[in-house]
Length: 490
Image (cartoon, rainbow, N blue to C red; front, side, top):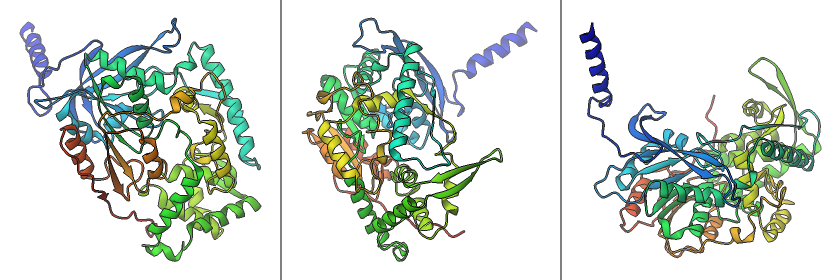
């Protein structure tokens, strides 16, 4: 019996040193607060990795600040000449780097290990990192009666004040949740990993965070890879650029059979908005429990819905166009189906600390705010693209990082930028402005790509690898097929 127990224990111990392919698992170097894990992607693929965390001040401006936990997964380098750790910065704000590494970008995370440890970082207040529980406010927006966009803003401002007070009463320092503190966490991570420099790899808000880091500790940044760049004064996008996006989209429509139905997209949108202004649509939304939610669907609802659906041309854009076509023909069938996903709920406003505070802290300059307000009066989506900003701007003046933060980053750090020509959130023209202070920039346009473009073409990975290898990067545009904007026949 003792022999049997010993044999089982021996086999168990032996199996722990082998992966599922029967090969000996490598012994990985571990830093403080790390442990070796088998990382499993959503595809079912697995790899040896390291799970770790570090403790950082919640608010470095407060000498008595408590420490909060920041989690990460580290994929150890596989190359013989690995360089500085590559830290992935998710978008949002509020996205999880660890979750992103499990998703469609898993192969890219693994491919970049050739050049150094690749870190899937859960930024402060996100994912597996320490975070406040979502705040359920007492504010509720009535769904079944007419309500103006201005009144919705009032509800959100009241909810945000209520939630900030609630989080503070629980011991959270709301003034620590801004992009400067977030960036300094990256530098603390660098120290934690005993690295002289890190390479930053981000998208959307992750590029915003990377630009902040380039200003704060440039001497400790080796290279930067960003996509869908958001400048430090671009948390709120210009409504006029959204209108230009729809005009560019018309050029895509004109090359497809959909041109017959939509000869003028801007005119179609204006016509539908005017119709909803005159007579909002009563929509009955079936719920999973069998109940029905009644929604009086108004123009600002449609503008909000559109703002959520235009980031990528191959995802929800075709559906959005046909929602407009349906409403133009008094058909709400497709709209009703989409609303079942729960964008507008008969529930109190619920907010999360990190994304809420980060956007308010990055804020908007007075000059840009005036520009946004002026353009929004006639813009197709008004101010809805970045809701709830600028609606919550200066809600708490102590949160705002000020004009010094929003000034352009000026740097000679080697930087590679990818832009999608059909990005419906961070527009190509704005991206060029976002990086105008970077003197060592390589810019690659991905034609017909949208906001989430890292997996849009194998060529993107090839050029990232060339950049990390120190080779000349091909700056010719990467050309993708036109997105299909017609709905499949049912």
